[in-house]
Length: 507
Image (cartoon, rainbow, N blue to C red; front, side, top):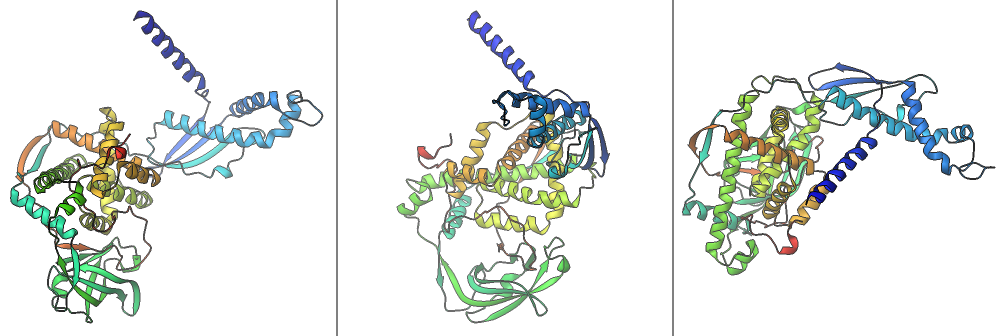
């Protein structure tokens, strides 16, 4: 045992020595950091000629043994000749290594807490023949602030014991999403569906349109950039072949800048009225929903789903109260460019959170629309929350581990009726794993804060959707890419624990 421990110590010492040898030698950099705003820094770096020469010497030394120069055997050409012949090729490699090492050293020395990649033109940097190398770059950083007191916060916590009636109602919603729309030759009522050609206009100008859009008649109809309130009343009694017009109120964050805050005309040319035919809970449907053996097993799964949704609500309410308390002094002005770039990431994070909590695609789409309609405000709030939660995570040494990723992906897979392996591949392809990491860490921090909080329990009301969400912008304008929240029609898996076969389990 002692010999094994000694060998382990020797290996640890050797590994440390190798890591130290691989670490680049420090440069005598001159660094000037200008504060452009709370989150923006302009950095000017000057690299002494001696350090530049050292990087060139290293490359030439590695090149010499195999350098091929006409008239000489490989590796036997004079160094001066090799330097002259390969200067251009070596210069590109030197520039790449030199700049990367400079950025690493600057970040370490200046403790910039970067939240984005440095913005500089690599191709424009040229290494001078004589004298120092100077280059500049812009970078976005986390604001500097004193961490507020987060222990002992008073938090309202929604609670509920889910009844058999709650479970039954939820199952009815699941069956409705599996239902069949049947054409109806009559007047539409609230809760019915219409197939409509939809056109948005500002005066005579057509802003956007969509053909054969299927919309449920509910009190509110939301778009990416606005809403129509009392929509069910607007369309009450409509029949196939009729046309109705309403006013869509655009938000102040609408992509069409010229029409922000204004109203546009929404024209609905109704092609069909449809009634929802809810299927019976047959053994075949039970198997399709998640390989359930009987209704009792489905009810247990639905109760688990309701528990996850309650947990989501508890986290959201706690997060709102926690961040409201912690961000009182966080009156930082965040750059508009930063908010615009981060709005997509915040939307991704919100969608992933809803997916792992078992919400339906329709509910997720409605939440997406709500976030889009106040993207600047919601993104600014989310960024401030993230900065503070990230600081707590660093001080408490909280991080995401592999099991955390596996669990998140398993829950998302259950909601989307996909295998965990497929979900992981999709997230990796979309570059969303870092978004998932932030979500995991922030949830862990919230849990830690809740461990030290004082609670006041409040009743939790089940969500009753009175909104239909449409994935279109009423005002037109350019649209940013968004995370896809929709899946094949009719999919609904109410229980996270009903995974597919063992071949689909995460590794």
